[in-house]
Image 1 (cartoon, rainbow, N blue to C red):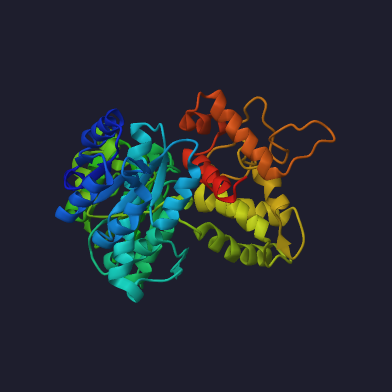
Image 2: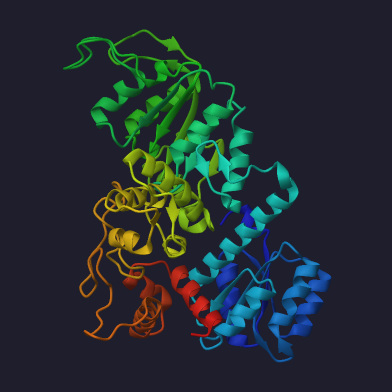
Length: 481
């Protein structure tokens, strides 16, 4: 997990010895330092003696409720991540724990992946909260260059861009498809001292491999069949500006060697030419893959990775950006309506709730495409839930993506027994109509039972993230439905 994780300590408060041992093994194998106690009294002594980075807290303990420890932990270690564990039938306790200040909850039984993912997310949330508290009003707000969103994760990204922009160092942007990597590169350009000079973008996945070298470094007339004129190439065109290499991990290894030489020497040699030219180019690159895994797999040169991975910026997926999807949608509806000659000026509360709860596997690109399709196919003052459902389908159905919804990011997968886009996902007998939330709840609970109580497996069968199911069950418990 790296040196950083090795420094993190977790206090496990669990009175069932077998479970405590299992949780401790999960955490220690991931590199955390673990202390295990079995009561509130012992937990209080540990918290009084030393600071911890995280607490995994059982709700039911022999000497009281674990929920009582949450405010005490917040007072002693305000930056600690607090997770509560509760039995399947005690979701109301999880609701109370969240109200008391817990960061997240886990329903027993849970596996190592669920525990570690939840813990990492909680630690990251705490880290971003510290950034906000330290920088305060100095952090950018809900709009920054081409970005929209006020979530903690994005405000931290805005700060990184501000810090990286004045530098000459290479920036390596990572993030899922559709998260705005080129927008990030353009923001670095517009905020930096090279703003008056060219910004040249090359999509390494969209250019045939045999033409990639010519696209970047240029060629002379007659260098190869079809080279009827000289070509400057992106590197020369970006002189004194920024060269943005998108989807860098799609570049073949032979060309990576030539790119490495260019990064090291700052010189360009056109295809078919012996002449070498010096250029002053700042490189910003991006990928939707994990570059370290690409290095391990031999698809990305390690020496090139270390040359380019100087200032890393990771763009979080839309599903982890709190209420940003709604903020983006509100702005996009007005812009797209004006472009398409429609009257839409906003969304209904039900439509916003759908946007807020949807996972958006295609991220911002998918959200924009869904909004545009809904606007083009309808008319009115506000987009409704039904208009959006006609494009993405009902939440919980696996086949939820319309033909154009992902813009190259993949199409919806239609499983037997589920409705096609625009049709209900569950089949209710004629004359018997249930409220939509009840249909969704019944489908989710039936899937969990069918999968033997394994929520991650049920989520995979339903085509949603496990976090979606946990969140929905928590909301149902809070509403006592």
